[in-house]
Image (cartoon, rainbow over all chains, first blue to last red; front, side, top):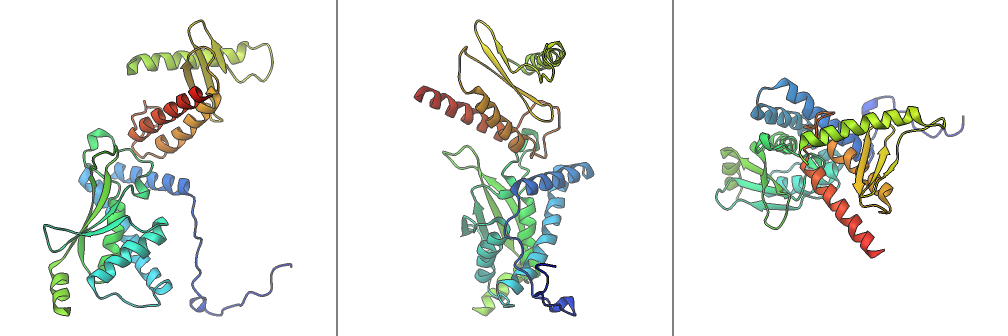
Amino acid sequence: MIGVGKIKQYSNVLDKPLSKGKQEVSLSAFAFLFSELVQYNQTQVDNIAELERRLEDAGYAVGARVLELLCHRDKGNRRETRLLGILSFVHSTVWKVLFGKVADSLEKGTEHEDEYMISEKELLVNRFISIPKDMGTFNCGAFVAGIVRGVLDSAGFPAVVTAHFVPVEGQQRPRTTILIKFAEEVLRREARLG
Amino acid sequence: MDTNDSLRVASLWHSMHAISQQLSPTTGCSGIELLEADTFDLHCFQSLTGTKFFVVCEPGTQHMESLLKVIYELYTDYVLKNPFYEMEMPIRCELFDINLSQAVQKDRVAMLGR
């Protein structure tokens, strides 16, 4: 047969090198899949807070796996131990792999020491979604907040992560901010490390 | 025009469209595409699934078919991919409205330029 021949056969599937994977996925396919995810969860819950929590849990599972994959594939199995290190990892590498671009901005909260914010003009998952008026402040970006929480938790930086709409003057659509609030132990460890 | 009126017009148009398919003297007719009246023109676009988009405009307006195709694309993007939209319900999607008015605006500007 033409084409078959030069593929090296690995006796153990674990020895096979990790493929780069498909770099591009159809946006429409993802949008429909995500829309179904939200709709399915809507049928299972009674209120909006519960829906947000479910989306976050779904994202958490993705985050944990993405961290493992990226640590092996992109960072040569190096582990981040510093706060700024893991934050910039999330802000650039994770965002680049998941959404095709780095996040718009990473800021430190002014009011509290343990708060950091990743901002995005419009989250990819929210591109085609219009929240009806009666759902208030619900944000499907809770899924992305879950992903970030999954990455941080698995990397040893437990945090509470939420997604918020922040209105911007002069623009019709509000921008989205992922608010990361680190646990006490993370800050103490960070202070110890100097 | 409030929601009830639009629903009435839409159902009326749906019935007329279906009847016209039967009435046509030629075989293989797919329904009314253009309705010309004294004070307005009505262009209709039917998708492969049977969903009909119609636009009412001034008599003699050009390039409505391309506008209808653009609107069809906006529909598939901002309405069908919205998890909070129920099928067959009136469309209340903010993004769809914003992009729709932008498309109509762009078309109007382009028409003035021609």
